[in-house]
Each structure stands twice: as structure tokens, then as C-alpha cells.
Length: 413
Image (cartoon, rainbow, N blue to C red; front, side, top):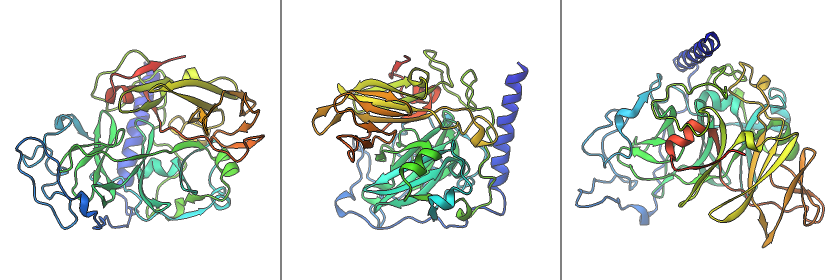
């Protein structure tokens, strides 16, 4: 019991550090601002039955009260979750300051302060490749950026260890996302700055407010180790920790001990699906008709491993490679235990089904003998220069995914 109490105390101290940092003079200086550009074809408001249609602003989005101020206002469509289940996480809105004006540096510059095992979130839009170190996202949770001409919100929820990237366009209107300071099932609740509706980070749904029922488009992204990133993407841009507009102890984890496979979630007010341990890491995929989660323990073997599966009847391959540290284990992120890097890809390339096997720290397909990396790139052999189609997935804790998707098929081995 003493160990559990010490871990709980560490997490409480971590939250206190975050709250204290949020109130410091080094808060993000960028001003929240919604872009008023609008697609004329998307200015209608979808509401069911005979509900009155709310007035719309010049940007075409519905006007009304802020869900940050009142979650039960009668002007809102029916909420998708019980507003009473949305809990205060401590800081006020944007008290955990999103980065609205991101600045990037080269991999060689970032290598001066990033360590090889550290996790970094990778986004690639038409060859515009950017890396967002988790050591920065830990303290900001949202980066509003534009990559390859596409307005994006790059997000990370520490309590659930979920890093997800969204298009930040709603009904044809570009906006930015902020941190609400609240949690739903221990998960980050975001808000859009155009209407101040509340959005769940795990599934990108607006659950309370004028935009209730809308869903943000997810963009494929995944975390890899810094060592793999700088080797495979040497010309990429990396978010600069020295230009965030805030002063934070980047490189440290304020939630020490949270990533304990035998532990319990913090600030979670839902029911735990006992088919797996609450804090078991999973790789989860959802389509319109199916949700599947693979236990990370079942994917891990040696230096690298391949797991074959399918979603909606389509074959997929899960690559796992050692060398990425947990950001939520030790106070020093780089010293966290090795949880490895995951990539999920379609097993079909140009109409040909491929069968993969691990080979050292890489992967080889049986059909051509080509060698592949954890990004799904063929780097040697007949298929060199080819790339597998990435499949959008979420790597998170089981308690979190199961709370949002209770009908998920769980694969443990």
C-alpha cells in the first residue's frame, strides 16, 4: 500500500506543478483567434426534429452561449454526455496554454536537447513532416498548427497517454482549439474558440455546446523515438521548446508513476472494463462499424515484432520496435521504461498482399525480401522507395479507450 500511496502523491504533486506553472508569468502570450473564412455551402445548422435553428454569425457557425460558462444552457442541443460527468481538472480555460504560434527548428538543433529514447509525435502531410516532442506537449496539450496547408490541432492527453491529431476546421470554418481545464473520464476536454463548445479529445466529438454532434477529422500520426525520427526524417521540422511563449521544465514528467501497468487511473469517474488491467497500454482502431484494441503486451517480443490483424475484413500489420521511452514513468522522460514504437499499416500495397516478419530492429516482407522501417517505408530491396498506407490508431490506456468504446473487441495475445 505504501508504494501506491507514494505514486498517488507523486501524481498529485505533478498536477500541482502543472497548476502552478499555468499561473506563472511565463504563460503563453499568443492570443486565441478564430479564422472567419467560411465555405458558403456549409453554413446550415443541422438540428433534429422541430428544434429552432440558432442564429449564425458572419462565419456561418451558430451563435449562442459558451459551454465554458454554462454546460446546461437550454440554448444548446441535447448533450452527448452527462454534463455533470465533466469534472474540473484544476486550471482555468487555457490555463494549460496551447501553443498557437509554433516555431520550428532543424533536427540538428533539436538534437541538442532531445535524447534518443524520447517520444516525438510525427505528422506528415504531403511531405511536410513535423515532429512534436512529447516533452513539450506534456505541458501544453494542444498545438494549433498548419501542416502541408492543412489547419491542424496536434493534441496530447497526459492522464490517458493519447496523442491525436485533428483537422481544426468545423463546417468549413477554420478555428483553433484550447484546453477547457476540465476532464471527462480522466480525459482532456478541449474547446473550440469559435463557439466555445466542449470537445472530447479521444474521439474528437463536440459533446456540449452549440456545435454538439460535430466531429473533427482525425489525421494519421504516431509517436516514435527521437533516434528513429532523426534517422528517418533528418530534414523534418521539430517544434522548438525555446519558443513556446511559456517557461516550463521541458524534459521532465510531472505525473511520475502514472504509467504503472498494475496501477489505477487518476481522476477517473467511470466504470473500468475488467477484461484487462486499467492501465494496460493498448493499440486501438475504430471504424464506422468496428472497434478493436490490441494489448501492447501481446505485441512486444525481442527488438522488434509484427502482429497481423484485420479491421472491417481488411488485413493490417502492426509493427513494434524497441527503443521508445514512456513519457509518464520517471520524472526524467528519457529515463522512462522502454515501451517501444508502434506503427499500423495496411498489408496491401498496389494490390499485392504482403506478409511481414521482424528482422533485427527492422521488418522484411516475405514476398520480395524488401526491408521496411517502423514508419512503413521500404528502405532496401525490390520495393525500396515504397510506403505502406498508414492506418489511424490510438495508443492509450485500456481504461480510457474502453470507457469511450465499451463494445471494443480486445485482443490480448
